[in-house]
Amino acid sequence: MKKSPTRAAPGRGALTVYEIDGIVPVVDPSAFVHPSAVLVGDVLVGPGVYIGPCAALRGDFGRLEVRAGANVQDCCVMHGFPGTDTIVEEEGHIGHGAVLHGCLVQRNALVGMNAVINDNAVIGESAIVAAMAFVKAGFVAPARTLVAGVPGRIVRTLTEQELAWKVAGTQSYQELTRRSRATMRAVAPLSSAPADRKRIPIPDLAPLSTLKAARK
Image: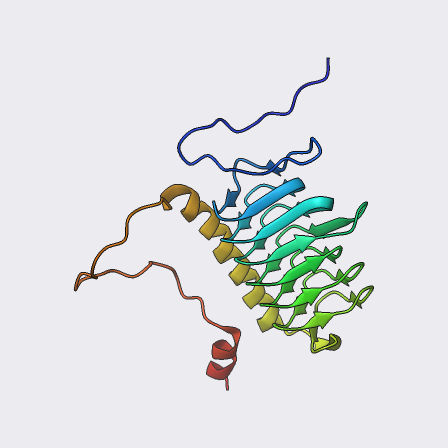
């Protein structure tokens, strides 16, 4: 007898996703999907994945897959044409507001804030697409390269410092997945901030530009 798929039990903190044409999104129990994110249809979210607030993963035409340890941050959009797969491989890092449409982001690659990756493009392993870049349909970014501009072009090979910074940033989102699962909850706002208001306790993590400036 064919085993029926399991569904998360309803109750406090239950995630709402949207079935279409009989296809229901799949979310690994160790992933974190913000309640304001929208997952529709043929969406596969893997172990340890972070899906941020207001992200839209519309698997109502093609399949969308976010693999283990990857993150898709707030206000990102994933979509694709019928019969296509839009994939973020393991350790992929998709920055705020980016759009992925029918493309492949390979293992450990980073797509910067508000970048657009079009159909059949491939972002190679450990490559970085700069913020605001527009990557044309069918473009292939080789592994460990920097892509920037409108339209996107290969600028150069990444440095070891840049590659290490990317890994550290992705690890911070993997930790955010764990923190969010453990401590995030809906509450009423405070009316004022106490004088001794604490900060979020996170180890050193800085913009790449800051790290580069410190080495000059």
